[in-house]
Image 1 (cartoon, rainbow, N blue to C red):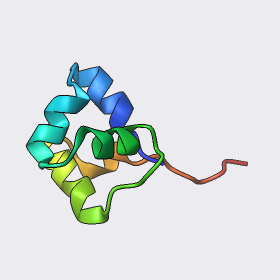
Image 2 (tube, rainbow, N blue to C red):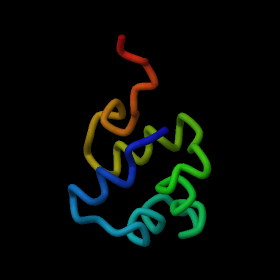
Image 3 (cartoon, rainbow, N blue to C red):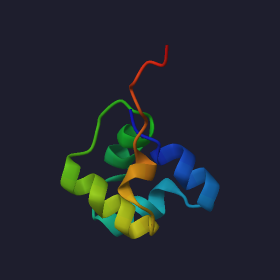
Length: 66
């Protein structure tokens, strides 16, 4: 799971803008945002770079706390 949607909302950035910056289709970026598809690691780093954040901020922990 990724946090791309949350980060875009926090920064007030539209998916269309991110798609343009990445050189990917809106549909592809929307699939990332909706967690229907996960971006490759290098794409995740590129998104973090474009959004000027650490790549860790785009990741959601899957650890279960006890």
